[in-house]
Length: 438
Image 1 (cartoon, rainbow, N blue to C red):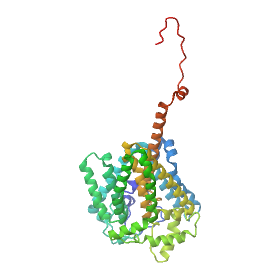
Image 2 (image 1 turned 45 degrees about the vertical axis):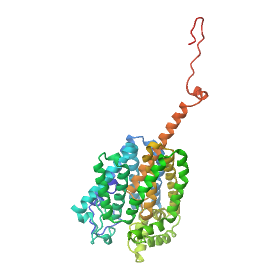
Image 3 (image 1 turned 60 degrees about the vertical axis):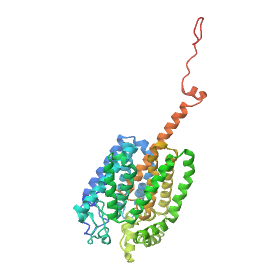
Image 4 (image 1 turned 90 degrees about the vertical axis):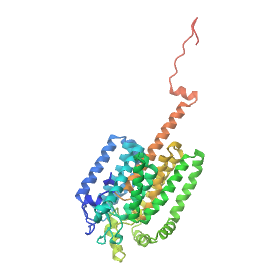
C-alpha cells in the first residue's frame, strides 16, 4: 500500500531529480512491475471477498477511469492515455479491494499504518539521504528548483509531503487509537507529522492541517445529536459547501496572505486562465486523459513563455481539459452521489459510531478542497485515488448494514397480519373430551 499512495516513487523508479525526464516515455520498468503486482493483489482481494456486492454498491467511482479509456478515441497518444487509464483504474480498484476485504475499521487501520510509515520514513530520509529527501537547487522539471530547501521526503515533492503530513496529523489525532494503542506512539507520530508539515512549507497543507480538525470535530458532534437535529444540520452543511465552492478562491487568498505565501497559488491562477481558453477549442470531449495535456496543452503554454507544467494543478480544470464539458458534467454527478452517500451515513448512522460515520463526509470535503490546487481527481498511484474509493465503499457498506438492520427490526415488530404471511400457521387441534385447553 505504501507504493500505491506514492511512497518511494523516486527510489523505485530510479529517478535522479537533477536529470531531465521524458514525460511521454514508457516509464520505469521497476515501477511498472511493482504497481502491476499491487493491481494483482487488489484483484485477488476482491475475488476472495464479496466482489459483486462491493462493485454494485460503489460502481460510480469507476466513471472517471472509464472516461479515461474512452478518451483513447480522441487522444493524441492513445498508448499514453491507455497506460494512465490502467493506472487510475488499478488505484481505484486497490482502494475498493482493501475496504471490501478488511472492513471499515480494518481498512482505516491499514491506511493509518501506511501513512505513518511514509511520514516517519520521510523524516529519516531528510537527514540520512538529503539529496533525495530535500528539494535541491539542481532539480529540473518537474521537481522545480524554486523549492530548494523544502522537504519532499520519500514522496518526491514538497506539496505531496505536506498533504500527507497534514493528513497524518489530523487522522492520527482523531483516529489514532484504531491503529496505535500506545499514547506515546500517537504523540510521536503527530509530532513528526507536524515537523514534516513545517519542512514541506506548503500553504495548501497548512490549510488542511488547520481546517480538517475543525471539520471532523463538527461532523462528529453532529453525528452524536438526535436524528431530528442531524436532519436540521444537513442544509447548513450543504450551504457551507456551496460557500466554500463560491468563495474558496477569496478564502485561499486571505489564508495565503496570512501565511506569507503567493496569493496566485504559485502561478496557478494565471495558468487556469490560459487553460480555459484552450478548453474552448475542444469544449465537448477535451484532449484526452494525460496525453492531451502532455502533447498539446503543455507545449502551447510553454510556447507563450509561461513555463512548464505537468498538469492543470486543479482537478476540475484537469477534467475539463481531458474530457471536456461532458466529462465535467459526469464528474459533478459523481460528486453529488458521493455527497449524498456520505451525508446519509452521517444522518442515519448510529450515534455510537459517529466518529466512523463522519469520516467519509470529511474526506469528501477534503477532496473538494484538494482539487482546487491539485489535479487530484485523475491522479493515479496516489492517496487521492485510494482514499475516496475506500471511504465510498465504507459509506455504502455501512448504509447497507443499516438497511438490513432496519428490515430485520421491521419484521420483528410487524403487526400480526404480516406475521401470518411470513410464518406457517400451525393447524388447530380439536379438543376432545377431557382435553386440557392449556
